[in-house]
Structures are given as structure tokens and as C-alpha cells.
Amino acid sequence: MNTSKDNTSVQSAPAAWIGLDWGDKEHAFAIQDAAGASESGTLAHSAENLHAWLKTLGERFGTRPIALAIEASRGAVIHALLEYPWLMIYPINPITSARYRSAFTPSGAKDDLPDAKVLLELVRDHAAKLRVLESQDPVTIKLAGLVEARRKLVDRRTQLILQVQSLIKSYYPQALEVAGDLKSEVALAFLNRWPDLISLKAARPATIKRFYYLHQVRSQDLITQRLALIAQAQALTTDAARVEVAVLHLRALLDQLKVFHQHIPRLDEAIHQTFASHADRDLFRNLPGAGQQLAPRLCVAFGTLRSLYPDPASLQKYAGVAPVREKSGNQVWTHWRWQASTFLRQTFVEWAGQTVHYSEWAKVYYQRMLKKGKKHAVVLRALAFKWIRVLWKCWQDRQPYDEARYLKQLIHRKSPNAAPINL
Image 1 (cartoon, rainbow, N blue to C red):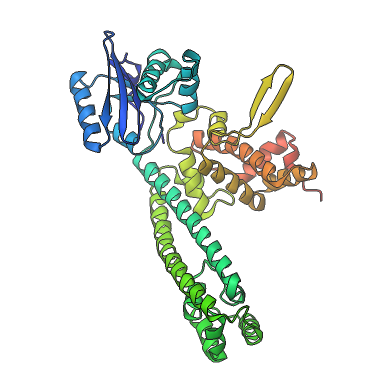
Image 2 (image 1 turned 45 degrees about the vertical axis):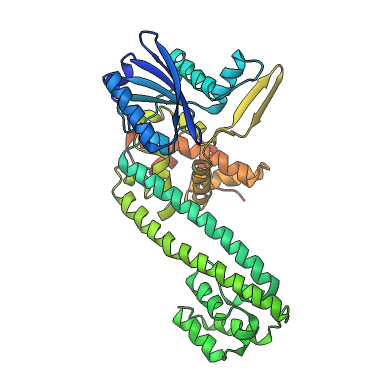
């Protein structure tokens, strides 16, 4: 998550520093004010307790800036903390606090209260090396929630479809060919009407043909092919006990799929409307290969806070497409960046894959790397790395990407990506 705090507040010396260790049922805190007075304690988990505590702090310090460190950058607690503009929130990576703690506690002993004190020390003594949490504008926040919710629903639908496929293969494999794509309404309707081969073969060809027509399947060759397959089909098993149980199971899964089919289009409409109202929509809606799904996700990936990513590398690292290089003695090795948002990385890599079909230079680069023996996934991550650098410049300048203009720049620089593909 990324709303900017008032610059005056950020630059002012904090009236107090707080380390907040957020737990499941209880939360520990450690406070030190500017005069050096310290205290610590715990809060029972509830929204009422948290807000009452925060209001008390506001009254106590006269809403002067307070620096608060917490091992989180998103979630309900962050949303609550952001309601208090005098709080300067410093998200701490759990690895950072763990290493800091181990440096001064070699035994590894820990409990909740010391964790809060560790966070307090980090924000009090090392704030210059930390970054204050910034939140995006309301439209970006809403759009981010919508695209992530849609991705989760699509992933869950995919899991359900795989379950349906596995179940059908166990007693009714012909359905995978005659019902159609299981993501479609026609497939759900087909399986609900004919959940086993016996009921399907009992139906007249004219009835099945009429069903296809009513569900917008009009290809005569396809319908004829499917009717022939049904006529020749033989049951994988005629064990009534097994088939009856499988049918009951199938209907339960189909009911769940129906819910996803209803709600994913609603999310699509909400995403479309929200994206249309976004301040930076013109920078992303016409990107090569982005389309209706990836354009809003790319818009969310950048947001509207230009200061959040001062250079392309900052976003490349945050998105997890920039590799990590480690060195020990004479050995140097490069590996995958572990601490990164999976959804953000997927967004850039998936879009990079689409640009291979819609961007000339991306296609050239992809083919060149394959010729060098690079793997498909490796090439797409490298291509995403390049695209972030290009888009970052467009985003900072508030200028939409222009493929022709960029190709001219590549030719001027004599880039191999501007050369024609030589297959």
C-alpha cells in the first residue's frame, strides 16, 4: 500500500516513538517520548481498544508527529492507523527486526514485549534508513482492491474447474469434449442437464442440438462432431452406486462455479468503472497487450505517488523482477528475489508475455533470448524488467507510451532489439 503524510509533519521531530507488535489476540507496545520517558504494555485485540488507545495518544501528545514502527505494510491494522494523520507509520520487514534482535540477543530468546522494544529502537535510532508508509489516493486503493479480489476469485474458480475435470474423468470423460469450456455458461448448463452419460444418451439428438442453439453454439460442424461422439460414447463405469455419488458431487461443484460466474463479471464491471475514473488511466489503457484485465493492474502497480519510486530500479526491486546478486569472498551468485509481492510480479510478467505478440521490439528481444538458450520464464522476467524501465519514464513524464517513438529511439541507439527478426 502506498496517502502522503504532510511534509511538515514528516520533517518535524517526533513527539514520541512507538514500537507496536501486532499479535493475534494481544498487541504489545513500547513508547518513548522526546523527554526520554518510557513505558510499555499490551492491548487486548479489538477495534475499540485500538482506536481508544490511539485517541489517548493524540490527546496526550497534542496530535504532534509520532513515529510508529510495525511489522506490517497492509491489512486492517494499517487501515486503522492511517486514519490518524499525526502518525508516521514505518513498516518494518520481519527479517530486519529479527536480524536486529539477534545482533543483541545471541541466545535467540524473545517474547512479544521485547519485539515491541526492538521496533521502538529501530524507529527511534534508524528512522533515516527507514521509509514512512505512504498511502495511495482513494481511487487507486479501490482499484487495487478490486483487481486483487478478482484475481483471487479467478484462482479459486480455476481450482474448482480442476476438481470438476478430475471428477468427470473418473466416470464421464466424454463430457469434457461435448460440454465445452468449463468456464462458460453453456458448459455449466450442459452438465446440470446431463450430469452423466446415461441421461445424455437418453436425450434425442434434436434436443441436444436445440440446447446448443439456445446457448449460442451455432457451428454445424462442431455440433455434428459432438452428436457423433455422443452416439458412439460408452460409459466408463456402469456402477450405479459410484455414478450416483459422482453426480451429487458434480452438482455441488457446479453450484459453486455458478457463484463465481455471477460475481467475476460484477467485479469486471466495477474495475472498468473505477479504472475509467483513475487520473492516470490514459497512461495504461492503450499499452500493447494490456487489455481490459492487465491495464488496471499495471495502473495499480505504479499508482499516483511519483515519489514512491524515484527511479526504475526501486520499482523493479519492489515488484521482484530485479534479481539479487550476492557475493562472498571470490564467489558471486544471482538468485530470485524472495521478498516481493507475488501478485505484482505476476502482473508485470504476465503483461510482458502479452507484449511479445503486440510489440515489435519485445518480440525481437524474446526471440533473441530464446536463440541464446534462455528459458521462457527467464526471458519474460527479463522483458518485464525492461518494460518497467520504459513505463517508469512514461509514468514520471505523464506521457502515454508510443511504440513508434520508442522504436526510433532504439534504432538511434543501434539497439539489437530494433533489428528485424531473423528466424
